[in-house]
Length: 342
Image 1 (spheres, helix red, strand yellow):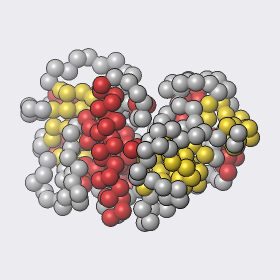
Image 2 (cartoon, helix red, strand yellow; image 1 turned 180 degrees about the vertical axis):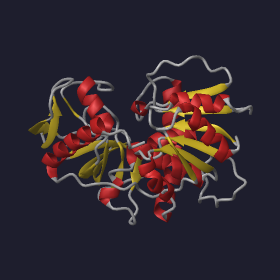
Image 3 (cartoon, one colour; image 1 turned 120 degrees about the horizontal axis):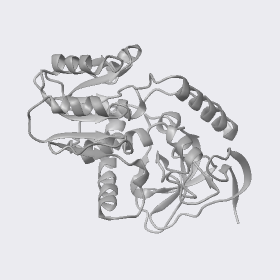
């Protein structure tokens, strides 16, 4: 039995513990085994570790974002071969798929081939953010992803991205721009230049009162919008009030907040995103969502290769599994200390 090193969590709330005797997973049908080169760190990792949300069995190695090299392919795999560079978001909370270990599993259809213009470090930061933005904009709000980015013209409809400075928000801005929308995003004033650099046409501060946020939205867009995505999980009231303020058909709202109670919205199509269903078996809706995600990946790969879709900026926390623990600690400290990443 081949073994490997990894960061094992024994139960909800338990610390990460370095283990050297973890059984190396074997790829099943339509799966690939990946040797990890770089792992990304996400807030969802800490949520799973602290609460057990999405975790299917204990003990477990967590982590969902990574880039690496394919070392083995399972039955029926056609897209990848040993030696290919790969990245993406692995299944969340499923043993064998966690990226905080030396080798991990990915589903062939939900994995990205890494283009030569994207480094292993950049690739490790893409998966969860891009997949969540794609769930919201392409699957829920039904934007149509073109083969190449649409050029900006001043007459185009606006799309509101609430929380544009976070990872999901930055990818949402880019996708909306590629699809031909003008993008208005909320963020901290300190992040205005960041969100404009990734494509936002205009910004407003989420720190304003709700009344003044709505005034800014109306002033900038002239009410020429019907789609809103909240990537911050903290702007539901702003989103719903902004959509209530316009009288247009087919108003729609997507949000990563799938836990806050919400009154029925008869005039607004509401979509609450769940990253945890990626790669999971389930009902017809989950199956359809995963099928849709698989269909987006080839186009997203081409846009990354062309440089029309760009990885977010990142920081390197360290090397090895000790570096992962250090990075998790730093992320959690920042998360508690600031809310400006939106």
